[in-house]
Image 1: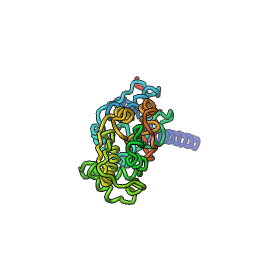
Image 2: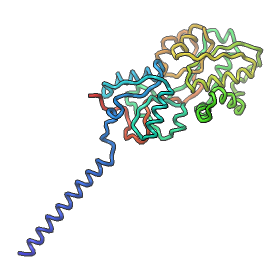
Image 3: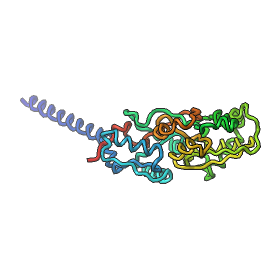
Image 4: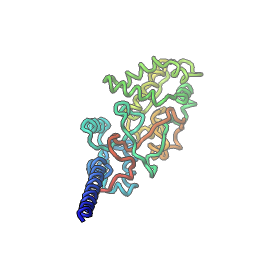
Length: 305
């Protein structure tokens, strides 16, 4: 009888310990995982963006409309500098933040542990090119200019190198671009294959004021001026970039993100300009978060109640 009681007591004790162990495992699992975090609430249902009217700003507003789970969200539009300031503060404090991001950009050199959220609806498109566009009649009016713009191409690593060095040193992007031209003679010479030196042929380029486009316009301006062209680069809003080339007010641009980012602007003016194709491949845009955020897709975000 005594043995039976001892066996019963031992069995009860074992069951109790097993239950405690199970509860502890469940608690640890819940406590160690961020999978239950409502990141919408954490960021006040706000995506931190850049300038109004920028291609990625327009696309993000479209994404908020298209994704049902982004109901009640908004994109805070201000400036690229303001967005980067918010990103710096969030990463320093390891706080959640969702930004409008793109490559090429020096942010990925400074913060390599950043990731794009999956975009199942394809709102942001896939890999893009940055295309060169020319005005109608440029080939006939200024064949040397047309040929150089048509042959201009480089790599995403080249652009990011200039952008990051400018950010790291505090120099203007255009100054770093000049050095890049001097140090990359082989790449630059390919842009001028079959092009003779000229004497003061004027070229009007339009571009957006972002560092990526300042880099491309900067290297092209420096390289062309070494061949005798007189180049003016005018920074304008992206809508004006397309209007200027289509109206013939500018000769060309090397700042058109296609086929997705600047799709609306391109389709509006495509019959009044010449698309010379990509001068750079590998451009990407989308919603970006720090790696420490346990989220992988736009669809993982929750709507505002």
